[in-house]
Image (cartoon, rainbow, N blue to C red; front, side, top):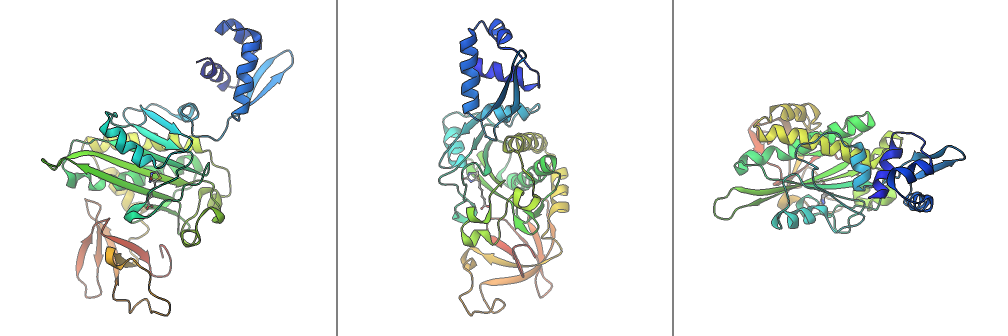
Length: 346
Ligand code: BTN
């Protein structure tokens, strides 16, 4: 497409005259001008310098395939197929549908906005327009379901790596896999597994990641605002969403190749280092125990929660905890919510 070719000529910072474009692409000068004009309407800032030509000054902060690919390096599996949406119900739902209609392993869906974003434990994930990176990937590892328990850890480390690369600050991970900055959640990760009925083998996994990039408190509902934040809120500088999406795709690609080769050691080690839950006293809220205490009810006397000390992660990414009687046990993600004694992480 002429639009893409024109843009990629301009991306290297060169100034190119309308005449040269016309010659290169066999177009009239008016057709070149029309293309430049429509790019400007999409948010590209293109300077026209008399006697010299066109120069690309600024690209828009949109999650379009072209913008994401302009930041994307070499990838092998994740991101080869890239589906970009201005608005969608949920990128996880899209990927699940895609998997049954022949979608390729590594296919990625990215959206500027979700109208029915889903979170863990049947919660909704607020996904306001143009404020976050909402991305899901289709994974089809040939492995037993129990081996896939480390996939959420892989996704958590991929997010921390991507944020560190793009923003220069590394989040911590609140177990199981909430990337946090200054004790508040900056990203949500939802891993969903589909198993074959007869064999119990993994059919596919959908890993959905929502990074809060430029939300303010007003973008979150009051209950979410207490524990959520965004990169811009914490780091106080602008963050490019297409650059973030591209870095995330690259990190997922690299770590997923490791996972397929049976090498989960590296990202599990990174996960242990990043995990802000370890060494802390935490409250465990099981599925039946998730409702907050009634007004006036004392936290410690609530029979629906338990305070334990988080000690370590096991090789399947379970949280090893010690209870008040000194007994150790392993908690698997999905069965509980973990909270700090005084806040979301602490
Ligand atoms: C959580 O924190 O509870 C997990 C939230 C996961 C949100 C992401 S956004 C992209 C993908 N699509 C969804 O509907 N959910 C995930």
